[in-house]
Image 1 (cartoon, helix red, strand yellow):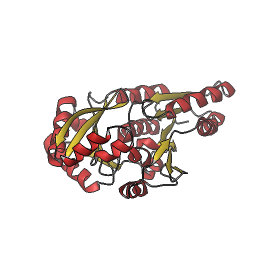
Image 2: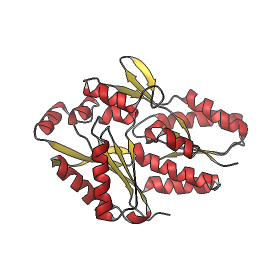
Image 3: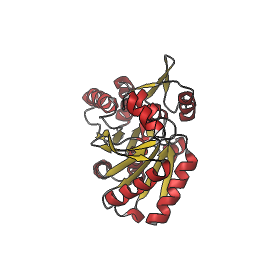
Image 4: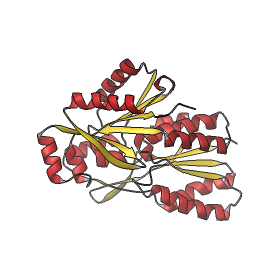
Length: 286
């Protein structure tokens, strides 16, 4: 029996990804106007961005332990080895919910094999880890081998991103109101990355054209072996910009495989429309 790969909606994979690679997934929750919506199932990322452009502030919440318990029990009953690849524990309590549920289910089914990885990744950075694991699962690799490879990919995944409007980071409590105002006034674009699972600013760049060049400079400084890896880009309802960045990457680094996904509802509710994120490995691909 093949290993079952389980993801969450913060990996920003598509329904086509889930179907093609037989990936099970759970949804985080988006809260709008006091109502709860399951990310990707009951609300679309496009709807989230349109509402944010209209001035709404959205909130999100983690997957509950009960949801994981129900899902895990399904595979425990079948005795199917499973691997859950989780959204960064520094950005959500979803990983913790999964570990609580796993302990309860494994007490009831002590022979069931389950591994959980805290990727310390977000968006399609985590999605790339999930896709690699799912490919190995389809090749009938063992749970131990898939887990080790997925952990390696997660440990070496770089996230470099920028946002179109600092106002959205202010609404989410990431920057002060004065910083957001001054940044918007001066057309300052922040460059951020994910360090040990946390969002951390790197520097500020003035103007959109310069910020994308700087992102590629950082990619060159940190990355390696680009021709043998999949480069990921995710965007906050800014496909044209994402395509432009993809062409810049292909031209500069002679990359063969660049995949683009939309930033989903959960992460998009905090980063806002116009977000552009770049994902690549800083180590040779295994």
